[in-house]
Amino acid sequence: MAHANLPEPPLTHVLAALKPRPQAPDFTLPDLDGKLHKLSDYRGKVVLVNFWASWCPPCRHEMPSMERLYLKLKGQPFQVLACDQQEDFDTVFAFTGQLDPAPTFPLLLDRKSAVAKAFGVPGLPTSFLIDKQGRIAYRAVGGRDFDHPEVIALVEKLIAA
Image (cartoon, rainbow, N blue to C red; front, top):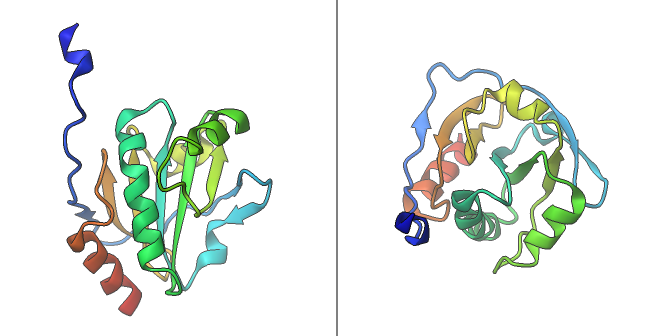
């Protein structure tokens, strides 16, 4: 299998708009410190909800760009919630030590993929941009370059709305 050693393809920056915007399923998940995060508590903010796993190459590839987006928009009504699928604390914690920059946004544990199922996630990674009213505005299946100028502009447009 010679193709197994090929480099990752470049990440795209295209997000698909959802019209009409469906209400995002509410959820409560613990982060690595055991603190619970409830999606509806972030109402009034734009939220990037990302479904990922440490064994998923495009997930690993896009995580630093999510951190750069999060840091760029710090202080604005914006939040990133990254929901790990079916892995334990030790696996996720060890993975974060390999990232540069390491994520400062919440990494949530969706151990039974119940939240992923509620969102209808078809595969990993899948991301949703949720508007300030709690509706899904955009969806992306596959790895993305989240700090691309076009993605930043989309998020800023949602923040301004």
